[in-house]
Image (cartoon, rainbow, N blue to C red):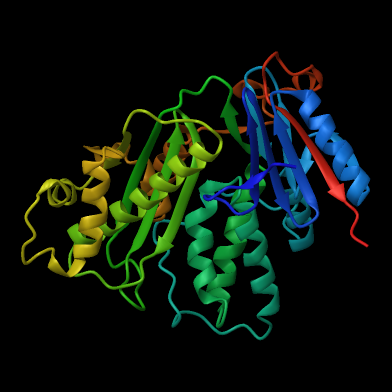
Length: 372
């Protein structure tokens, strides 16, 4: 049918002819079709139905556990039904909510607590929390910490997992909001926590990427090697963020969106920024020379521009360590998370989701292919 597989994402297929553009997102036998031209969507569905006998579910409202609501302001994506089912299955549907996923004093280790007799329950719970991070970046750090102990979980680890459930209970309908009026400007925040792991002394990298003010990408991950200084840790985080920025640029190009301006990447480490801007390698940086080359190459090509930000305004901090309730809530609100079912936050209402899509907006449909 003339589609080509995107380089940035193997499950994304696009077709472009003149002013016509169609995107196809495929997951096994589930398909999302998006295009400004409804006639193109109908033509593709007709062809697929003739070959595979698909079931047309109409405008996109539910996909792989994700609930989608649309209005003239934008699109909200939440996992409320999935969250409530998880709470009910775990017996936490009527529990007392917690303000944060983890307390500031929490430092998980393999040596703390007693090993669980049945680790299947813990593994299943962490797996479900990992899937919940698709729309809940606020639990990314806690889930990343819990996932390190799938082979030997203890009762302490299970208690922390239960606290995450208590936190999720407070806002089961929290969602990601994608504004229809976002500017095509990428900006990001990157941070790290030096020697955070008490077992291996490896550090944690965290970053979050925005399309204007809309959160589109984030990560919380333990670094692969031990670092000898906080500057080195911050620089490795810069390298990881630079790779993510380049991938986002490639993805936008696959969607035929050209980003003309450099990405603003905010870092709270002046020493890391100085290393990136210094063209001379020296004793302190020769063992991280590959990362140095990577970041400097992106700087020279003007893919990104490094800017300093104070620690109090470092949004990526929420992906590297447990924070106090006030700080945590402040950062989460700046990430652009809303609750779809709270009228006070200007969410997409039930009435809005029933109104027709505005002119020139992207039409979304979901079809399920019946596999014989």
